[in-house]
Length: 284
Ligand SMILES: [Zn+2]
Image (cartoon, rainbow, N blue to C red; front, side):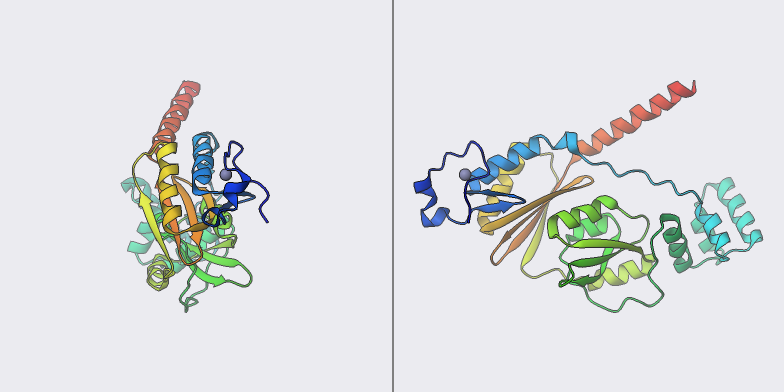
């Protein structure tokens, strides 16, 4: 099946490749690597070029504020809206928490308003009823306040509920790593907590989060170790904001390795600083 190793500098001879232990190799996307060594070299090259290709989440600025959406949906009276806005502006408290504190809005109405702001559906009241075995790392779900609500293995579709904002990088990385199309909707914080308890991690997989700033060589070497451990036959890789998510799948076991990239967070901060200085300069 496999014609040649995906690593251009591969030194493995045809004779070596026919040795039983070296058969199999690791497939990553369109390419196949004849050995863990070649896989490690290839991912090392790929990691070295990553910072330049780091996708940024585009800031979403809804045209309507949450208060105006609540008003237009008839969840608030003019009076409530005016009072809540005045309080929020004078105390600095978020409008949403002012509304909840006064009992003028419940969390489902707020989720429904957020959904309208983003242009996605809101999960209807009392619609959560099932356990979902979608096999997405819990670290990513917690970090983006997202939870699988429904998973169709056959249709390869996943319904993902978000609480505060839709993270497109998460949807995109799920598609890249699992090959499953992820569709967003909005849910309430209570529904999120309820469903998180029901998300059962698949028994044949586990996740590892590596927090340190690794060099591309260290990251590749670490992955090589895990690839040997699970006897990986397939690898997939995706960026999800500050996380670099790699899934290594063997016949019986698979592992999700998440590298939390501190340098990219620092770079973000620096870019923010630069853009704010730019604004100050252009304003002055
Ligand atoms: Zn090779």
